[in-house]
Length: 247
Image (spheres, rainbow, N blue to C red):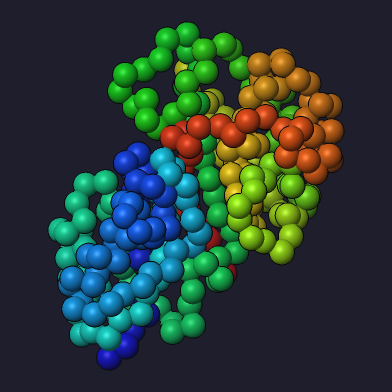
């Protein structure tokens, strides 16, 4: 009996070459497909809500796949977790409508980017946050967040190499929050994201927080639609795909 399964995945992307399956490299998609093919004794292809780059993590990546099987969701989830182990965990598995597609049915995604803002770096947890030594001005950084909330052309924050019909996206929510005295999180929810868009945004917002550029400069960068005007891409290891929303 052919079924459409939806899975929610948590993963530590540190030792993976991103989400998308590639020959002769360890990827999230490749590891899960290998486990499913072994469990179900049939070739399985999974469709993720989107690609995450090498080193990027996820709390709630969503994927779906079709399989002809009588195995129930509980046993399938248990089997996947027993084969994959540790750095990838299947948090949920359920049967959905045949027409459901993890990428095409997504209406928004939320990303979190973590920064450790202290003089000294950390030894434990260093692979999950960007260490910035000099103090950041949270208030001016949040002014930038207000500027990108809405519908804009984010071409200034898009790296090349990903096909898309338009660089216009709608940001529903964007903020910089203090977690504690030392840690900061950039939260952003949007209809979709361009290649490296979150990392390019936070890289440029950090320049404002360090008073290397001002808020008006940031606005001009957004309006320029020129990647060369924005800051270098922030490190991958601070970024997490938090969750994907569906109608």
